[in-house]
Amino acid sequence: MDDNSNKRHSLLSVLNPFEVFHHHEKTENKKPSRFKFTTQRSFEALIFLVVFFVFFGLLAYKMTLPNMLNTFMQTAYHLLLETVFYIMAICVLMGAISKMFTEFGVVRLMENILRPLMKPLYNLPGVAALGAVMTFLSDNPAIISLAKDNNFARYFKKYQLVSLTNFGTAFGMGLVVIAFMTGKGFGSGALVGLLGAVIGSIISTRLMQRFTLKSYPELDCPVTEEEGTEQNISFKSEGSVFQRFLNAMLDGGKSGVGIGVAIIPGVLCISTLVMMLTFGHPAEGYTGAAYEGVPVITWLADKINVVFYWLFGFESGALVSFPITALGAVGAAIGLVPTFIDTGIITNNAIAVFTAMGMCWSGYLSTHTAMLDSLGYRKLIGKAIGAHTIGGLCAGIAAHWLYVLLAMIF
Image 1 (tube, helix red, strand yellow):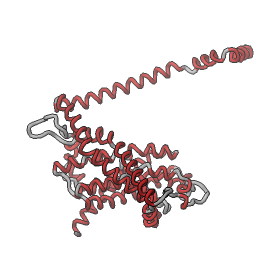
Image 2: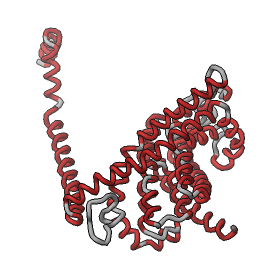
Image 3: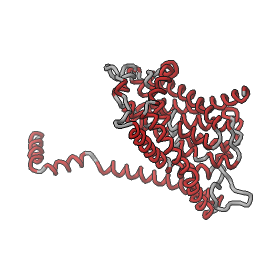
Image 4: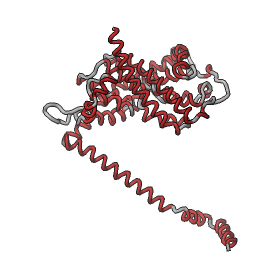
């Protein structure tokens, strides 16, 4: 009986393979799983709609619907004109400068100067200094393009290569952040913040290595047995000096435009929402103007402001909005600074903390997953995020107390 059934099934597969396909489809019970999936999506949509309408409903209840909508659009519009284009201009100029630094060997010179610090501070080979300089001049993903270069990766053990995600992120968009803060008249605070970011990067990188080795001791081995050839890591292009200068300036500026465009969604979406939850209304009440809102973040932060004051020196709870925004996008975070300046709550100490946390975090929540996934170590995402959260907090604390110390000396 069973033999005859098998023969008939084999014959059926030869004569009509589609029938066999439908037979298997039925046995795998596709319909229940599809129904279950759609049910899950329906619940997800329902929860999202409830949260969405409750959030904006409460804002509209407090501000009135016309004022809320007008403030939402006016804030985004003012951020685009007054902040985004300013940041984009900085990105273009700094992109051109960084590309010329790369083209004419300044980056390699800086690498050679920083090389002796890599092993004692970060437990990384000296060539890792190149990654720090590259991300400082551009953005977080620059470290991944280097990590995928065999001549670069051969210097590392596997757990060290993975920790480059934390190491590189800690310096992402550093030049843009420092240039922005200096352009606003807070150069001394920005330089102190750079020192704080270095401290945070050391803590984040070391913690990541410790977490990785503790969970996966097998990663304590070289990426490859072949020796690295550092001379093959070259950024020099062909042509005369003038041609190379012109191409570097234009190509660097073009890459700066890309970074400037990339920060637009973060600044307009994230910063607008954060501002509407940070600032209140003028004395005459809500008018629908830009930068009005319901100061929930400020109210909550003021309740425990003694903690933020001791850790970061924040004199206003509204300043907490910067590190919160920097978790997702540092471009969006620095978009908050002009409004803080206009309201008179900014000091050099706050700029030092902003620079340290902005550089160190660099929107790591939105980049760590993709960076580790591209390296093939998705399983370490949680450890990388945990280590970097601690590193960023330490960067802010270090920047504050370094500024207090330097203020006492000078």
